[in-house]
Length: 262
Image (tube, rainbow, N blue to C red; front, side):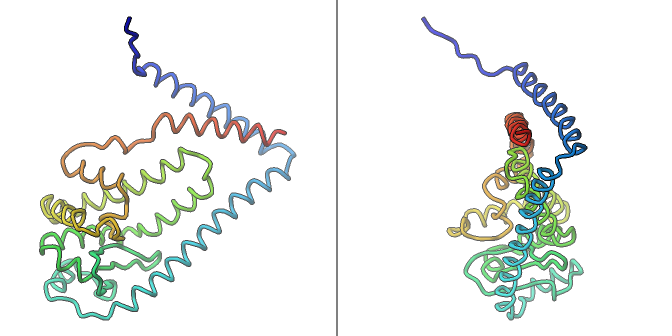
């Protein structure tokens, strides 16, 4: 006799989501009552702990960025190729905001929080055609103009402070993917889909692409999958928070609340 193992139905998923929502509402009510209560020691300890984690994350990220930036700029003393100068002039960019470095790795990324810069490597310029280089530069210029490195820093701080919530970690990943997709859409509008797709394909096909910190690849496998799907006119399933993550986060919060009630 064969036993049919039915897959989770839509009804089951909706039921799980409804239970999670009810739990979150009750949890919010409990948190409000807890905040209005008189147990200031636990409140202060919890808040101070989360703020400390967030502050340490900011300090760590700032130190790493400052150290890395100094290393990059120490190699950025190479004259720009003529076609790259033409592209920079075409976009009306300040050449001082472009760090052009000698490197065997194809790199194109935005760095800096309050004064973001764009870093390009000699290997990248040699690897990409002019239209592809235009698309890559437009992609990074979008990040620069919207201060995306600063946005990512804030997201990392929130993710570090709420490390125990799966839904926050999933949101952090999805937010980074969204930034990449937004920059891709801008580049496609200005340079065309073929140019961006060609640049992404060449970078991902490069033998050392997996080791590069180019923004074309540093978003990770999930971001690359979503970007490729978007260029193909498809929607990636990784662009929304899962019900499983919501349920797990609700359970984690309830467990935390029970511990605080002890």
